Image (cartoon, rainbow over all chains, first blue to last red; front, side, top):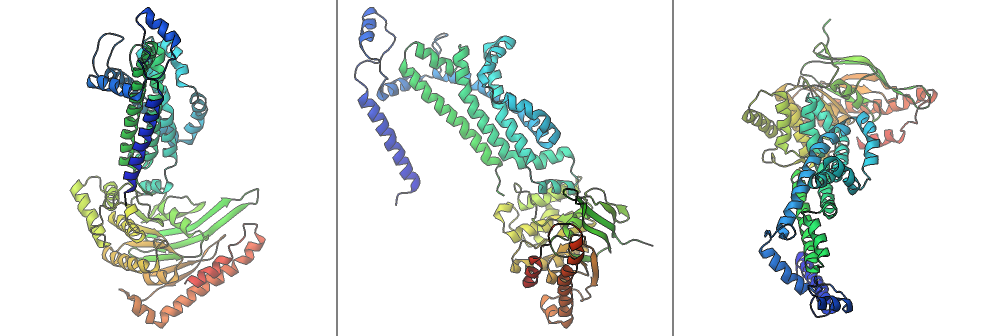
Length: 275
Length: 287
Protein backbone atom coordinates (compact mmCIF):
# COMPACT_ATOMS: atom_id res chain seq x y z
CA UNK A 1 0.00 0.00 0.00
CA UNK A 2 1.16 3.50 -0.81
CA UNK A 3 0.88 5.78 2.23
CA UNK A 4 -1.85 8.41 2.09
CA UNK A 5 0.63 11.27 2.14
CA UNK A 6 2.51 9.96 -0.87
CA UNK A 7 -0.74 9.40 -2.75
CA UNK A 8 -1.88 12.95 -1.96
CA UNK A 9 1.46 14.29 -3.16
CA UNK A 10 1.27 12.32 -6.40
CA UNK A 11 -2.26 13.58 -6.97
CA UNK A 12 -1.15 17.17 -6.33
CA UNK A 13 1.66 16.81 -8.87
CA UNK A 14 -0.73 15.26 -11.38
CA UNK A 15 -3.19 18.15 -11.01
CA UNK A 16 -0.38 20.68 -11.37
CA UNK A 17 0.91 18.96 -14.51
CA UNK A 18 -2.57 18.79 -16.03
CA UNK A 19 -3.26 22.43 -15.24
CA UNK A 20 0.05 23.71 -16.61
CA UNK A 21 -0.12 21.38 -19.57
CA UNK A 22 -3.61 22.58 -20.50
CA UNK A 23 -2.49 26.20 -20.12
CA UNK A 24 0.68 25.58 -22.16
CA UNK A 25 -1.17 23.92 -25.03
CA UNK A 26 -4.10 26.33 -25.21
CA UNK A 27 -1.85 29.40 -25.34
CA UNK A 28 -1.06 30.26 -28.90
CA UNK A 29 2.55 30.23 -29.95
CA UNK A 30 4.40 33.42 -30.67
CA UNK A 31 5.92 36.11 -28.54
CA UNK A 32 3.94 37.20 -25.50
CA UNK A 33 2.61 40.73 -25.51
CA UNK A 34 5.28 43.03 -24.19
CA UNK A 35 5.56 46.74 -24.24
CA UNK A 36 5.95 47.47 -27.94
CA UNK A 37 9.01 49.50 -28.82
CA UNK A 38 8.29 50.36 -32.42
CA UNK A 39 5.40 51.19 -34.67
CA UNK A 40 5.29 47.78 -36.31
CA UNK A 41 4.73 46.35 -32.84
CA UNK A 42 1.83 48.72 -32.33
CA UNK A 43 0.24 47.61 -35.55
CA UNK A 44 0.77 43.96 -34.67
CA UNK A 45 -0.73 44.34 -31.20
CA UNK A 46 -3.82 45.86 -32.72
CA UNK A 47 -4.46 42.81 -34.87
CA UNK A 48 -3.19 40.13 -32.49
CA UNK A 49 -5.31 39.05 -29.55
CA UNK A 50 -3.44 39.59 -26.30
CA UNK A 51 -2.74 36.35 -24.44
CA UNK A 52 -1.30 35.11 -21.20
CA UNK A 53 2.29 33.97 -21.19
CA UNK A 54 2.76 30.24 -21.14
CA UNK A 55 3.94 28.44 -17.98
CA UNK A 56 7.26 27.62 -19.65
CA UNK A 57 7.85 31.31 -20.37
CA UNK A 58 6.97 32.23 -16.81
CA UNK A 59 9.30 29.53 -15.50
CA UNK A 60 12.19 30.92 -17.56
CA UNK A 61 11.41 34.44 -16.34
CA UNK A 62 11.13 33.25 -12.74
CA UNK A 63 14.47 31.49 -12.99
CA UNK A 64 16.15 34.68 -14.21
CA UNK A 65 14.52 36.72 -11.47
CA UNK A 66 15.29 34.29 -8.68
CA UNK A 67 18.92 33.99 -9.70
CA UNK A 68 19.37 37.64 -8.80
CA UNK A 69 16.42 38.69 -6.64
CA UNK A 70 18.08 41.72 -5.08
CA UNK A 71 19.27 43.68 -8.09
CA UNK A 72 18.60 47.40 -8.07
CA UNK A 73 18.66 49.32 -11.34
CA UNK A 74 16.82 52.44 -10.31
CA UNK A 75 13.39 53.38 -9.01
CA UNK A 76 11.34 51.32 -11.41
CA UNK A 77 13.59 48.29 -11.78
CA UNK A 78 14.26 46.45 -8.58
CA UNK A 79 14.49 42.70 -7.98
CA UNK A 80 11.53 40.80 -6.56
CA UNK A 81 13.51 40.13 -3.37
CA UNK A 82 13.85 43.84 -2.68
CA UNK A 83 10.17 44.47 -3.35
CA UNK A 84 9.11 41.60 -1.10
CA UNK A 85 11.48 42.83 1.61
CA UNK A 86 9.88 46.30 1.51
CA UNK A 87 6.41 44.78 1.83
CA UNK A 88 7.47 42.40 4.60
CA UNK A 89 9.10 45.19 6.56
CA UNK A 90 5.89 47.25 6.40
CA UNK A 91 3.71 44.29 7.31
CA UNK A 92 5.87 43.26 10.24
CA UNK A 93 6.17 46.82 11.60
CA UNK A 94 2.42 47.43 11.43
CA UNK A 95 1.69 43.95 12.74
CA UNK A 96 4.03 44.16 15.73
CA UNK A 97 2.68 47.61 16.62
CA UNK A 98 -0.83 46.17 16.43
CA UNK A 99 0.11 43.27 18.71
CA UNK A 100 1.59 45.66 21.26
CA UNK A 101 -1.78 47.39 21.44
CA UNK A 102 -4.17 44.49 20.83
CA UNK A 103 -2.86 41.96 23.33
CA UNK A 104 -2.75 44.21 26.44
CA UNK A 105 -6.00 45.93 25.46
CA UNK A 106 -7.62 42.55 24.80
CA UNK A 107 -6.54 41.48 28.28
CA UNK A 108 -8.15 44.52 29.86
CA UNK A 109 -11.36 44.02 27.88
CA UNK A 110 -11.43 40.29 28.61
CA UNK A 111 -10.86 40.71 32.32
CA UNK A 112 -13.45 43.42 32.90
CA UNK A 113 -17.09 43.18 31.91
CA UNK A 114 -17.43 46.96 32.21
CA UNK A 115 -14.55 47.61 29.82
CA UNK A 116 -15.96 45.01 27.45
CA UNK A 117 -19.36 46.74 27.42
CA UNK A 118 -17.83 50.22 27.18
CA UNK A 119 -15.48 49.46 24.27
CA UNK A 120 -17.73 47.09 22.38
CA UNK A 121 -19.60 49.80 20.37
CA UNK A 122 -16.31 51.30 19.17
CA UNK A 123 -14.94 47.93 18.16
CA UNK A 124 -18.17 47.01 16.38
CA UNK A 125 -18.14 50.22 14.33
CA UNK A 126 -14.41 50.37 13.58
CA UNK A 127 -13.91 46.71 12.78
CA UNK A 128 -15.96 46.44 9.55
CA UNK A 129 -14.22 49.47 7.98
CA UNK A 130 -12.06 48.39 5.06
CA UNK A 131 -8.49 49.17 6.09
CA UNK A 132 -7.91 50.96 2.79
CA UNK A 133 -10.66 53.44 3.65
CA UNK A 134 -8.23 54.83 6.23
CA UNK A 135 -5.64 55.56 3.57
CA UNK A 136 -6.68 59.15 2.67
CA UNK A 137 -6.84 60.14 6.32
CA UNK A 138 -3.56 58.40 7.03
CA UNK A 139 -1.85 60.13 4.11
CA UNK A 140 -3.24 63.48 5.22
CA UNK A 141 -2.22 63.11 8.86
CA UNK A 142 1.07 61.23 8.47
CA UNK A 143 2.15 62.77 5.16
CA UNK A 144 4.37 59.81 4.34
CA UNK A 145 3.19 57.08 2.01
CA UNK A 146 5.25 54.31 3.58
CA UNK A 147 4.20 55.19 7.13
CA UNK A 148 0.59 55.47 5.91
CA UNK A 149 0.68 51.90 4.61
CA UNK A 150 2.17 50.77 7.93
CA UNK A 151 -0.73 52.47 9.66
CA UNK A 152 -3.19 50.66 7.40
CA UNK A 153 -1.52 47.35 8.30
CA UNK A 154 -1.71 48.32 11.96
CA UNK A 155 -5.44 48.96 11.71
CA UNK A 156 -6.26 45.80 9.80
CA UNK A 157 -4.25 43.46 12.04
CA UNK A 158 -5.54 45.04 15.24
CA UNK A 159 -9.07 43.62 15.26
CA UNK A 160 -8.65 39.86 14.94
CA UNK A 161 -5.96 39.81 17.64
CA UNK A 162 -7.86 42.19 19.90
CA UNK A 163 -11.12 40.28 19.65
CA UNK A 164 -9.49 36.87 20.04
CA UNK A 165 -7.46 38.01 23.04
CA UNK A 166 -10.52 39.44 24.75
CA UNK A 167 -12.48 36.30 23.99
CA UNK A 168 -9.68 33.98 25.11
CA UNK A 169 -9.14 35.89 28.34
CA UNK A 170 -12.82 36.13 29.21
CA UNK A 171 -13.40 32.44 28.59
CA UNK A 172 -10.57 31.13 30.78
CA UNK A 173 -12.12 28.39 32.92
CA UNK A 174 -13.16 29.66 36.38
CA UNK A 175 -11.57 26.44 37.69
CA UNK A 176 -8.12 27.75 36.78
CA UNK A 177 -8.92 31.10 38.37
CA UNK A 178 -10.02 29.29 41.53
CA UNK A 179 -6.65 27.54 41.63
CA UNK A 180 -4.97 30.94 41.40
CA UNK A 181 -7.20 32.30 44.14
CA UNK A 182 -6.50 29.47 46.56
CA UNK A 183 -2.78 30.04 45.93
CA UNK A 184 -3.19 33.76 46.77
CA UNK A 185 -1.60 34.83 43.49
CA UNK A 186 -1.62 38.57 42.79
CA UNK A 187 -3.69 39.86 39.87
CA UNK A 188 -0.58 40.41 37.78
CA UNK A 189 0.80 36.95 38.52
CA UNK A 190 -2.59 35.42 37.77
CA UNK A 191 -2.69 37.26 34.46
CA UNK A 192 0.81 36.21 33.47
CA UNK A 193 1.00 32.65 34.81
CA UNK A 194 -2.60 31.44 34.52
CA UNK A 195 -4.67 33.56 32.15
CA UNK A 196 -1.98 34.16 29.52
CA UNK A 197 -1.05 30.49 28.98
CA UNK A 198 -4.72 29.49 29.18
CA UNK A 199 -5.70 32.03 26.53
CA UNK A 200 -2.54 31.69 24.41
CA UNK A 201 -3.99 29.31 21.80
CA UNK A 202 -6.94 31.66 21.19
CA UNK A 203 -4.61 34.68 21.05
CA UNK A 204 -2.37 32.87 18.55
CA UNK A 205 -5.40 32.12 16.37
CA UNK A 206 -6.14 35.85 16.31
CA UNK A 207 -2.51 36.64 15.48
CA UNK A 208 -2.60 34.12 12.64
CA UNK A 209 -5.73 35.71 11.15
CA UNK A 210 -4.13 39.13 11.58
CA UNK A 211 -0.94 38.29 9.69
CA UNK A 212 -3.01 36.75 6.87
CA UNK A 213 -5.13 39.87 6.52
CA UNK A 214 -2.05 42.12 6.71
CA UNK A 215 -0.47 40.31 3.79
CA UNK A 216 -3.69 40.64 1.77
CA UNK A 217 -3.96 44.34 2.54
CA UNK A 218 -0.33 45.36 1.94
CA UNK A 219 -0.58 44.47 -1.75
CA UNK A 220 -3.61 46.70 -2.20
CA UNK A 221 -2.10 49.48 -0.09
CA UNK A 222 1.11 49.51 -2.11
CA UNK A 223 -0.86 49.57 -5.37
CA UNK A 224 -2.48 52.75 -4.04
CA UNK A 225 0.56 54.58 -2.73
CA UNK A 226 3.20 53.21 -5.10
CA UNK A 227 6.95 53.60 -4.84
CA UNK A 228 8.16 50.29 -3.52
CA UNK A 229 6.82 46.95 -2.40
CA UNK A 230 5.39 43.93 -4.11
CA UNK A 231 1.97 45.52 -4.56
CA UNK A 232 3.55 48.40 -6.44
CA UNK A 233 5.63 45.90 -8.41
CA UNK A 234 2.54 44.03 -9.64
CA UNK A 235 0.84 47.23 -10.71
CA UNK A 236 3.96 48.64 -12.31
CA UNK A 237 4.50 45.48 -14.38
CA UNK A 238 0.85 45.61 -15.43
CA UNK A 239 1.44 49.14 -16.66
CA UNK A 240 4.53 47.84 -18.46
CA UNK A 241 2.34 45.02 -19.83
CA UNK A 242 4.93 42.52 -18.61
CA UNK A 243 2.54 39.69 -17.80
CA UNK A 244 5.42 37.31 -17.10
CA UNK A 245 6.36 39.50 -14.18
CA UNK A 246 2.75 39.88 -13.08
CA UNK A 247 2.10 36.15 -12.90
CA UNK A 248 5.48 35.53 -11.32
CA UNK A 249 4.97 38.15 -8.59
CA UNK A 250 1.43 36.91 -7.89
CA UNK A 251 2.92 33.47 -7.24
CA UNK A 252 5.59 34.98 -5.01
CA UNK A 253 2.92 36.83 -2.98
CA UNK A 254 1.21 33.51 -2.43
CA UNK A 255 4.42 31.78 -1.36
CA UNK A 256 5.37 34.49 1.14
CA UNK A 257 1.82 34.54 2.54
CA UNK A 258 2.00 30.81 3.03
CA UNK A 259 5.37 31.11 4.77
CA UNK A 260 4.01 33.74 7.18
CA UNK A 261 1.07 31.51 8.00
CA UNK A 262 3.37 28.53 8.59
CA UNK A 263 5.46 30.51 11.07
CA UNK A 264 2.37 31.45 13.08
CA UNK A 265 1.12 27.86 12.91
CA UNK A 266 4.43 26.71 14.40
CA UNK A 267 4.14 29.25 17.20
CA UNK A 268 0.56 28.11 17.82
CA UNK A 269 1.72 24.53 18.19
CA UNK A 270 4.23 25.71 20.77
CA UNK A 271 1.53 27.11 23.10
CA UNK A 272 -1.18 24.53 22.38
CA UNK A 273 -2.50 22.24 25.06
CA UNK A 274 -5.26 19.61 25.29
CA UNK A 275 -8.24 19.73 27.57
CA UNK B 1 -14.64 27.77 75.65
CA UNK B 2 -12.08 26.86 73.02
CA UNK B 3 -13.45 26.54 69.54
CA UNK B 4 -12.43 23.57 67.38
CA UNK B 5 -9.62 24.13 64.88
CA UNK B 6 -12.10 24.56 62.03
CA UNK B 7 -15.36 25.95 63.27
CA UNK B 8 -18.34 26.57 61.02
CA UNK B 9 -21.02 28.60 62.74
CA UNK B 10 -24.67 28.97 61.70
CA UNK B 11 -23.83 28.96 58.01
CA UNK B 12 -26.71 29.77 55.69
CA UNK B 13 -26.94 30.11 51.93
CA UNK B 14 -29.97 31.52 50.17
CA UNK B 15 -30.57 32.29 46.53
CA UNK B 16 -32.87 35.06 45.47
CA UNK B 17 -35.86 33.20 44.05
CA UNK B 18 -37.04 33.80 40.54
CA UNK B 19 -40.13 35.96 39.95
CA UNK B 20 -40.88 37.09 43.50
CA UNK B 21 -41.12 33.55 44.76
CA UNK B 22 -39.14 34.61 47.78
CA UNK B 23 -35.77 33.33 48.79
CA UNK B 24 -34.70 29.80 48.19
CA UNK B 25 -32.84 28.47 51.21
CA UNK B 26 -30.16 26.01 50.10
CA UNK B 27 -29.11 25.17 53.65
CA UNK B 28 -29.19 26.80 57.06
CA UNK B 29 -28.04 26.42 60.64
CA UNK B 30 -25.01 24.50 59.53
CA UNK B 31 -22.73 24.36 62.56
CA UNK B 32 -19.86 21.93 63.05
CA UNK B 33 -16.24 21.73 64.06
CA UNK B 34 -13.21 19.79 62.94
CA UNK B 35 -10.36 19.20 65.37
CA UNK B 36 -6.71 19.42 64.38
CA UNK B 37 -5.63 16.24 62.62
CA UNK B 38 -9.18 14.99 62.29
CA UNK B 39 -10.66 13.50 59.10
CA UNK B 40 -14.28 14.59 58.79
CA UNK B 41 -16.63 13.76 55.96
CA UNK B 42 -19.74 15.64 54.94
CA UNK B 43 -22.17 13.30 53.24
CA UNK B 44 -25.45 14.01 51.50
CA UNK B 45 -27.35 13.86 48.24
CA UNK B 46 -26.64 16.09 45.31
CA UNK B 47 -28.31 19.44 45.72
CA UNK B 48 -28.05 19.61 49.51
CA UNK B 49 -25.37 22.25 49.15
CA UNK B 50 -22.45 20.26 50.54
CA UNK B 51 -20.10 21.46 47.81
CA UNK B 52 -21.24 25.00 48.51
CA UNK B 53 -20.32 24.56 52.17
CA UNK B 54 -16.87 23.37 51.19
CA UNK B 55 -16.40 26.29 48.81
CA UNK B 56 -17.43 28.71 51.55
CA UNK B 57 -14.91 27.13 53.91
CA UNK B 58 -12.32 27.49 51.13
CA UNK B 59 -13.30 31.15 50.75
CA UNK B 60 -14.22 30.75 47.09
CA UNK B 61 -17.90 31.49 47.78
CA UNK B 62 -19.52 33.69 50.39
CA UNK B 63 -22.27 32.62 52.77
CA UNK B 64 -25.53 34.51 53.12
CA UNK B 65 -24.95 34.47 56.85
CA UNK B 66 -22.78 32.65 59.37
CA UNK B 67 -19.03 32.36 59.82
CA UNK B 68 -16.13 30.06 59.18
CA UNK B 69 -13.21 30.13 61.62
CA UNK B 70 -9.89 28.44 61.08
CA UNK B 71 -7.58 28.53 64.06
CA UNK B 72 -9.77 31.26 65.56
CA UNK B 73 -9.63 33.53 62.51
CA UNK B 74 -12.58 34.32 60.28
CA UNK B 75 -12.26 33.12 56.69
CA UNK B 76 -13.07 35.88 54.19
CA UNK B 77 -11.06 34.96 51.12
CA UNK B 78 -9.36 31.91 49.64
CA UNK B 79 -5.82 31.33 50.79
CA UNK B 80 -2.85 29.05 51.08
CA UNK B 81 -3.88 28.03 54.60
CA UNK B 82 -6.66 25.94 53.08
CA UNK B 83 -5.67 23.53 50.35
CA UNK B 84 -8.42 22.41 47.99
CA UNK B 85 -8.64 19.17 46.04
CA UNK B 86 -11.19 19.89 43.36
CA UNK B 87 -13.74 17.45 42.02
CA UNK B 88 -12.45 17.72 38.47
CA UNK B 89 -8.79 17.98 39.48
CA UNK B 90 -8.36 21.51 38.01
CA UNK B 91 -4.81 20.87 36.86
CA UNK B 92 -3.33 23.45 34.53
CA UNK B 93 -3.34 21.59 31.20
CA UNK B 94 -0.29 23.38 29.78
CA UNK B 95 1.91 22.26 32.67
CA UNK B 96 3.33 18.82 33.38
CA UNK B 97 2.40 16.89 36.52
CA UNK B 98 5.58 18.16 38.15
CA UNK B 99 4.98 21.67 36.79
CA UNK B 100 1.54 21.73 38.36
CA UNK B 101 2.82 20.73 41.79
CA UNK B 102 5.77 23.11 41.53
CA UNK B 103 3.45 25.96 40.58
CA UNK B 104 1.62 25.58 43.88
CA UNK B 105 4.76 25.03 45.93
CA UNK B 106 6.31 28.16 44.45
CA UNK B 107 3.24 30.16 45.49
CA UNK B 108 3.51 28.71 48.99
CA UNK B 109 7.27 29.20 49.39
CA UNK B 110 8.33 32.06 47.12
CA UNK B 111 11.61 32.27 48.99
CA UNK B 112 12.68 28.73 48.06
CA UNK B 113 15.21 28.03 45.33
CA UNK B 114 14.08 26.23 42.19
CA UNK B 115 15.91 23.06 43.22
CA UNK B 116 14.25 23.13 46.62
CA UNK B 117 10.82 23.57 45.05
CA UNK B 118 11.48 20.74 42.62
CA UNK B 119 12.75 18.37 45.33
CA UNK B 120 9.75 19.04 47.51
CA UNK B 121 7.32 18.58 44.60
CA UNK B 122 8.95 15.36 43.40
CA UNK B 123 8.72 13.95 46.92
CA UNK B 124 4.95 14.40 47.01
CA UNK B 125 4.49 13.00 43.51
CA UNK B 126 6.48 9.96 44.65
CA UNK B 127 4.17 9.60 47.66
CA UNK B 128 1.16 9.21 45.38
CA UNK B 129 3.05 6.76 43.16
CA UNK B 130 3.59 9.03 40.18
CA UNK B 131 7.32 8.53 39.86
CA UNK B 132 8.21 8.44 36.18
CA UNK B 133 5.11 10.35 35.10
CA UNK B 134 6.34 13.73 36.31
CA UNK B 135 6.83 15.21 32.88
CA UNK B 136 3.54 14.16 31.38
CA UNK B 137 0.84 16.72 30.86
CA UNK B 138 -2.66 16.15 32.30
CA UNK B 139 -4.00 15.16 28.88
CA UNK B 140 -1.46 12.32 28.80
CA UNK B 141 -2.47 11.03 32.23
CA UNK B 142 -5.38 8.76 33.14
CA UNK B 143 -8.22 10.14 35.24
CA UNK B 144 -6.85 8.47 38.36
CA UNK B 145 -3.34 9.81 37.78
CA UNK B 146 -4.70 13.32 37.30
CA UNK B 147 -6.55 13.14 40.59
CA UNK B 148 -3.36 11.89 42.25
CA UNK B 149 -1.48 14.90 40.93
CA UNK B 150 -4.26 17.02 42.42
CA UNK B 151 -3.81 15.26 45.76
CA UNK B 152 -0.01 15.64 45.66
CA UNK B 153 -0.41 19.31 44.79
CA UNK B 154 -2.73 19.96 47.73
CA UNK B 155 -0.59 18.04 50.24
CA UNK B 156 2.61 19.62 48.94
CA UNK B 157 1.64 23.11 50.08
CA UNK B 158 1.06 21.65 53.57
CA UNK B 159 -2.01 23.72 54.35
CA UNK B 160 -3.55 24.07 57.80
CA UNK B 161 -6.59 22.24 56.54
CA UNK B 162 -7.28 20.23 53.42
CA UNK B 163 -10.65 20.50 51.70
CA UNK B 164 -11.70 17.78 49.27
CA UNK B 165 -14.73 18.09 47.03
CA UNK B 166 -15.75 14.55 46.01
CA UNK B 167 -12.18 13.83 44.94
CA UNK B 168 -13.00 10.31 43.76
CA UNK B 169 -16.36 11.07 42.17
CA UNK B 170 -15.15 10.81 38.59
CA UNK B 171 -13.09 7.64 39.03
CA UNK B 172 -13.91 3.99 38.43
CA UNK B 173 -14.30 1.74 41.47
CA UNK B 174 -10.90 0.02 41.25
CA UNK B 175 -8.92 3.22 40.79
CA UNK B 176 -10.94 4.76 43.58
CA UNK B 177 -9.92 2.16 46.16
CA UNK B 178 -6.24 2.45 45.26
CA UNK B 179 -6.24 6.21 45.56
CA UNK B 180 -8.28 6.11 48.77
CA UNK B 181 -5.55 3.95 50.28
CA UNK B 182 -2.85 6.32 49.09
CA UNK B 183 -4.76 9.24 50.48
CA UNK B 184 -5.10 7.53 53.88
CA UNK B 185 -1.41 6.76 53.96
CA UNK B 186 -0.52 10.34 53.07
CA UNK B 187 -2.95 11.63 55.67
CA UNK B 188 -1.48 9.43 58.38
CA UNK B 189 2.02 10.43 57.43
CA UNK B 190 1.31 14.16 57.43
CA UNK B 191 -1.32 14.44 60.16
CA UNK B 192 -3.37 16.80 57.98
CA UNK B 193 -6.75 18.10 59.07
CA UNK B 194 -9.23 17.08 56.39
CA UNK B 195 -12.78 18.02 55.48
CA UNK B 196 -14.11 15.90 52.64
CA UNK B 197 -17.34 15.96 50.67
CA UNK B 198 -18.75 12.72 49.31
CA UNK B 199 -21.99 10.95 48.48
CA UNK B 200 -20.41 7.50 48.88
CA UNK B 201 -21.26 5.88 52.22
CA UNK B 202 -18.48 3.25 52.07
CA UNK B 203 -15.89 5.87 51.26
CA UNK B 204 -17.05 8.00 54.18
CA UNK B 205 -16.82 5.12 56.68
CA UNK B 206 -13.48 3.85 55.42
CA UNK B 207 -11.76 7.23 55.52
CA UNK B 208 -13.23 9.35 58.27
CA UNK B 209 -13.14 9.81 62.02
CA UNK B 210 -16.51 11.48 61.94
CA UNK B 211 -19.33 11.72 59.41
CA UNK B 212 -21.71 14.66 59.17
CA UNK B 213 -24.93 13.64 57.47
CA UNK B 214 -26.86 16.30 55.62
CA UNK B 215 -30.58 16.18 54.93
CA UNK B 216 -31.82 16.83 51.43
CA UNK B 217 -31.96 20.31 49.96
CA UNK B 218 -33.45 22.77 49.59
CA UNK B 219 -33.45 23.92 53.19
CA UNK B 220 -30.86 21.29 54.11
CA UNK B 221 -29.34 20.94 57.59
CA UNK B 222 -26.75 18.79 59.22
CA UNK B 223 -29.03 16.09 60.49
CA UNK B 224 -26.62 13.83 62.31
CA UNK B 225 -23.05 13.52 63.54
CA UNK B 226 -21.76 9.94 63.39
CA UNK B 227 -18.46 8.97 64.99
CA UNK B 228 -16.56 6.24 63.16
CA UNK B 229 -14.56 4.45 65.80
CA UNK B 230 -12.80 1.71 63.88
CA UNK B 231 -9.13 1.62 64.86
CA UNK B 232 -6.47 2.86 62.46
CA UNK B 233 -4.75 1.91 60.29
CA UNK B 234 -7.83 0.40 58.78
CA UNK B 235 -7.89 -2.57 56.44
CA UNK B 236 -10.63 -2.56 53.88
CA UNK B 237 -11.10 -6.33 54.05
CA UNK B 238 -11.14 -6.59 57.86
CA UNK B 239 -13.55 -3.68 57.97
CA UNK B 240 -15.92 -5.60 55.71
CA UNK B 241 -15.94 -8.51 58.16
CA UNK B 242 -16.96 -6.25 61.08
CA UNK B 243 -20.66 -6.53 61.86
CA UNK B 244 -20.56 -2.95 63.16
CA UNK B 245 -19.41 -1.76 59.75
CA UNK B 246 -22.56 -3.09 58.20
CA UNK B 247 -24.70 -1.67 60.99
CA UNK B 248 -23.20 1.76 60.44
CA UNK B 249 -23.52 1.47 56.69
CA UNK B 250 -27.17 0.43 56.96
CA UNK B 251 -27.83 3.26 59.40
CA UNK B 252 -26.32 5.88 57.09
CA UNK B 253 -28.05 4.56 54.00
CA UNK B 254 -31.28 4.38 55.88
CA UNK B 255 -30.91 7.93 57.06
CA UNK B 256 -30.03 9.25 53.62
CA UNK B 257 -33.03 7.59 52.01
CA UNK B 258 -35.36 8.52 54.91
CA UNK B 259 -34.24 12.10 54.99
CA UNK B 260 -34.99 12.63 51.33
CA UNK B 261 -38.55 11.48 52.00
CA UNK B 262 -38.97 13.53 55.15
CA UNK B 263 -37.83 16.75 53.57
CA UNK B 264 -40.46 16.34 50.89
CA UNK B 265 -43.12 17.54 53.29
CA UNK B 266 -42.00 21.10 53.99
CA UNK B 267 -41.04 21.32 50.35
CA UNK B 268 -44.69 20.91 49.39
CA UNK B 269 -45.70 24.10 51.15
CA UNK B 270 -42.66 26.23 50.43
CA UNK B 271 -42.69 27.29 46.83
CA UNK B 272 -39.58 25.97 45.20
CA UNK B 273 -38.36 23.87 42.34
CA UNK B 274 -39.53 20.23 42.08
CA UNK B 275 -37.53 17.70 44.03
CA UNK B 276 -35.11 15.43 42.15
CA UNK B 277 -37.03 12.37 43.32
CA UNK B 278 -35.60 9.61 41.12
CA UNK B 279 -32.17 10.40 42.43
CA UNK B 280 -32.78 8.84 45.83
CA UNK B 281 -33.49 5.42 44.42
CA UNK B 282 -30.61 5.70 42.00
CA UNK B 283 -28.28 6.47 44.88
CA UNK B 284 -29.44 3.41 46.80
CA UNK B 285 -28.73 1.07 43.96
CA UNK B 286 -25.20 2.41 43.62
CA UNK B 287 -24.15 1.92 47.23
